[in-house]
Amino acid sequence: MSESTEPTEREARAGATEGTGRWRKHLVDLTTITVGVLIALSLEGLWQWMSDRSLVREAEETLRLEIEDNRRELERVLAGDEQRQAALDQAMRFADELLEDGSTEVSELDLGFTVGEVSSASWLTAERTGAIAHMDYERVRELARVYEAQDLFVAHQRQNLDRLTSAIAVISGGGDPTKANERDLLAFRDQVTALRAALFIEAQLAERARELYDAVLSDSATGTR
Image (cartoon, rainbow, N blue to C red; front, side, top):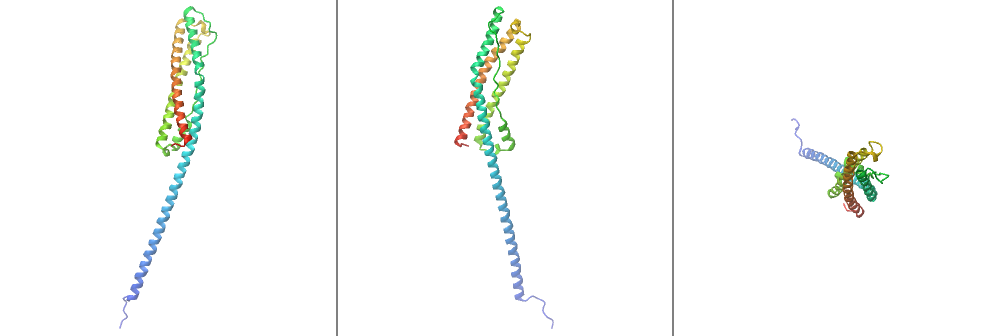
């Protein structure tokens, strides 16, 4: 009589147990791997968050220092406003007297402008490094207003320098400004008149920028974000 090749009930039970054990082991291994990946992703996310916060803190500090420097520069410009207006008044008197009778008691012309050397390097750096993308929206909006006002002041200042160059070119073209002809004197007077008005506008723009500087620096001091 041939021996049966079919597995006994005990062998079948043992095989089923072994199969279940293998699946359980695979499930444990898969769970361990999944947990490990999640932990790694969490740590990477945490590291990225800390890196972004560090970038923002560094950007905030450099922006604060830049704005403080720019504010001091505008203070210097505004402090000399009366002197510059007086110089332009003297230039106007020079032209008026020469146009009236060909002579003048003004012995010296000083049309030198005080140039406010304000910077936006930290703002541009914050944009290019991505620091601004991680800042609070209202904070970015506040800083953007500051630098927009500053850019407007700088643009107006460049226009004034162009006017100043034109005025000087007109009056000094022939060497001795007291020998300038009537046409040149009238052109010079027009440039000086434009400069007087432009200087007033420039002062208003500087005052506005200074107000915005103060607001940003106040927020920085109180920790408002």
